Image 1 (cartoon, rainbow, N blue to C red):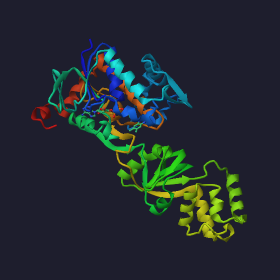
Image 2: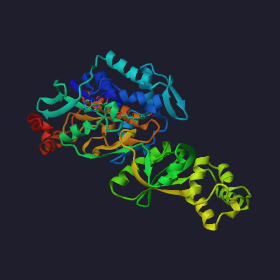
Image 3: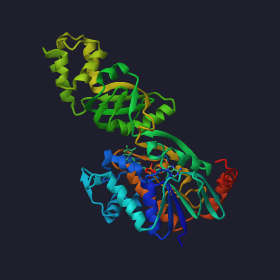
Length: 434
Ligand SMILES: Cc1cc2nc3c(=O)[nH]c(=O)nc-3n(C[C@H](O)[C@H](O)[C@H](O)COP(=O)(O)OP(=O)(O)OC[C@H]3O[C@@H](n4cnc5c(N)ncnc54)[C@H](O)[C@@H]3O)c2cc1C
């Protein structure tokens, strides 16, 4: 028999967890810390919400435990997501495999989820920031900042990570999980921009967009590579290809390792194209500024010329041998030293989170505390750009909602030994320490 399920956090994962649990017959209450449920959804995909993707290869998900997201994604993947939203009246549009609501309005996704919660009589309470959770024989005791107390047989912790804290995900979910004995893999900004040491380049190229490839090296080892539109900024580099590799930069820097980004500004050039370019370059009677403007945005060309100490008016043939060599090197492999990432305010997601070793992958139930489930970004799973983070929120919300409502429990031995180890937060709750 389904009992009382408390969902903490009403973002993408909390919404789907609540709907799924209610559909399975549970009495569901959602406690949302902010005043607007699903606030982050509104800013997704530049307000259009890229909510899933046709390509659900596991390689688009980065998880602390290899293969962990597979079970939830198999049970609730692209097709299930499309049909879930279609049943809520939301049509989709496909842009080369990237799926958006037909209306291209993120607000429509939020509205559909809120409407379904209401239809299912899910109790959705806003301005109820949870500050304590403790488990006891009776169930979970949950307390909010406003002084409200709740008792439930299951808790789904879906409080998000630390990215975009203005939308409510301020990292308090990690503190709650930690108070219950869960280990937190250090949270770092992901899908974010990178700061570089080469400020002389930045001063000139700021505001430029150009096609290119980025390779990210941590301690000399390539960890990520992507191609697309690079944005060159006053502090470094941005744009989707940079976002895609940024999680590796965050962890490399956290570990104190040297992190480099190598930019290739002519990624579509074949070997023959490059040797043709070299020949043109040596023969050309044009000045180097005009020559480069045929290849690159003006400010990028200017920045590269600055690096080799050459004026734009210098004829190509007058460049010294080492200047030519260096210029060609920079066109195809500009090496930048990464000094940092932008902070959580600017990041789209959090890498790190609740350690997956302590979570069961099919039900997303805690291995430490039976009846405690996790969903969404709070777990140590982050996806690439392209609808993968929302897909993880939907898939994990579905898995946790279903298992919580069905009263799935880990074998007594698995839970009880761990409870002894963690103390279940009860003592700390009573003392008001958590
Ligand atoms: C600008 C931006 C654009 C993005 N675009 C896309 C995109 O197009 N496609 C994509 O797949 N992903 C995108 N993402 C990522 C995606 O939005 C998130 O990964 C996803 O929303 C995470 O869902 P969640 O439910 O786990 O967490 P959240 O959406 O962060 O929700 C957590 C909720 O919990 C609440 N909460 C936190 N702590 C407490 C507490 N102590 N008590 C009660 N409530 C609490 C918060 O207020 C919040 O409402 C984007 C992110 C950003 C910031």
